[in-house]
Length: 217
Image (cartoon, rainbow, N blue to C red; front, side, top):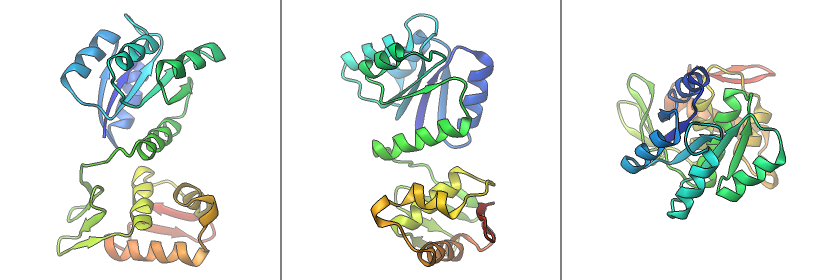
């Protein structure tokens, strides 16, 4: 997934781009002129635009892109807390809006929601172990011996774990982010999915903390 981040604060921009680069292909620019140059030369899956940057504001740049029928999903980032800028962002064509200061993980969750909402594919293979590779587009895992297909829910669970490494994830959190409200699974169903994933990617990759949840190592 290719993301264009426009943030003129060098410290914040470096922190955000470094964090996101662990999961996505990120291009970081400091102003609208740089952003436009990148957009002219590359295809992006998502824009993350700060409002106050040199040149055109993030809102103005997005308005201009939309006038040229660029439909790339866009998240507006700003320190403004008023509804005026919120409305202007959505009117310009943004689909999401996040206020500073924000947690990096919150931004990551919003990006993942955008990926699902706009059916943005993650094409790049994900290395789970030296000889274990996950292919998101095909929902398959190659364990060095054979390629194993994952059921849709198994793939979504694996992707959620990959997006949140080394963090304790409760079963409730997993269910809320994978299943629809009207199709909530039983505890036994969740355990069966986890068991299958362990068989495919290795039993030590998903650690159970009894009574608390799971952690992806």
